[in-house]
Amino acid sequence: MSKVILTKWGNSIGIRIPAVIIKEAHLHPGEELEIRADEKGVLTLIPIKNRQEGWLEQFNAVVDNSSDEAHLNLNNDFDMDEWTW
Image (cartoon, rainbow, N blue to C red):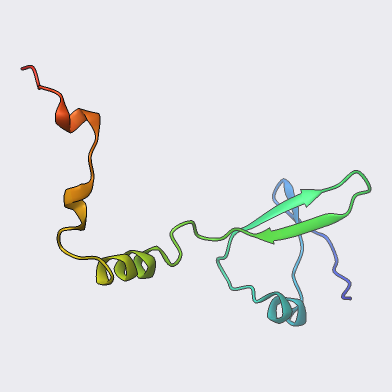
């Protein structure tokens, strides 16, 4: 457990997170955190994961494991209906 001091920062209040906590939580400068407070005043910080993290690797894995003709079996009503111009 570490103690921190609240510091005025503009209209907000800030804290410095001790290095030992940063290391234990695997935090990095510039990383976004969500902060919540419960009814007892307990604060919880939750790292916000990048929604696209790992996306490229997953996409490449699908491409590598697919044949060039895999998309030919995809059907939908839109492709089957006559188009009107």
